[in-house]
Image 1 (cartoon, rainbow, N blue to C red):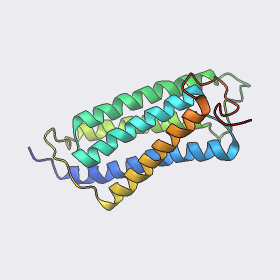
Image 2 (cartoon, rainbow, N blue to C red):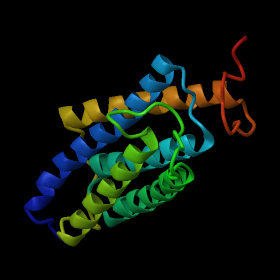
Image 3 (cartoon, one colour):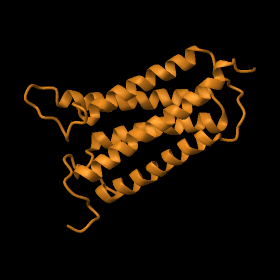
Length: 184
């Protein structure tokens, strides 16, 4: 079955969405380094959820636009929504200053909640538009898709190393103040 003409635009929208997910992860990592604010366990769960959404989008770009890939993105965005929502609710009480420094007036976990909700709406609209093709074929990545893939995969590896240095192979502290594997 041939995908409708809108499928061509969905590919480019997926490229942009993957760049957006990469930008979120890069911003969080730069924020972590510049302000010396280590991510808490809920923040790390949100990063994992963004990473899984990114994997699903990358699968769309490489293997074709499929409902399975959007299903992975939806479930990952739902997990991220729960994690970010939990963190928002932990700091919603009057007088609570929240965790970490705010960015443009909101904490990163609030921005994450909004981003996950936006990703859910995007995936839902794509699935409703009937542009997905269960028989899509693998394709060569466009230049924009390659840039998005490199940006995403590089920040994915950097976050993996950073989290391992922060937490080691055990559980991460609730309120991290230093890296477990770096000298103090």
